[in-house]
Image 1: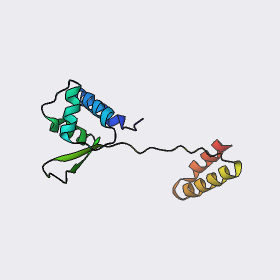
Image 2: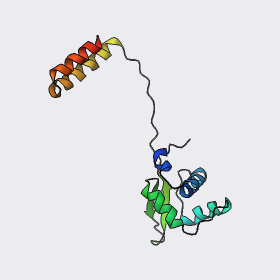
Image 3: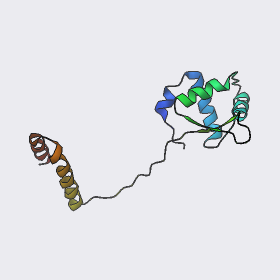
Length: 126
């Protein structure tokens, strides 16, 4: 499964969103050219007269990365921008570790927060 910024996808216009999802499904994290994207959309029956308009919308939404083609400086190479995959770490925290973390937090708070707020935290803890 791809890790996509769905908030940015939701901001796209409907025509761009549909084409983005089709291209993302086929290309995933591969680099591609305008011609390859046009071919994929054509095969799906979604011809677009101006691919630059689509790529501009995707670039503005932060969904695509663009670099210059080394063989032809007039053309670009595109790649979909995916979010980093996060790894969930489950580590059990014992009572001593929890107290240590609370003391560190109290030390940080003590220097920047009014004393009455600290009392609130202490009453909340108990």
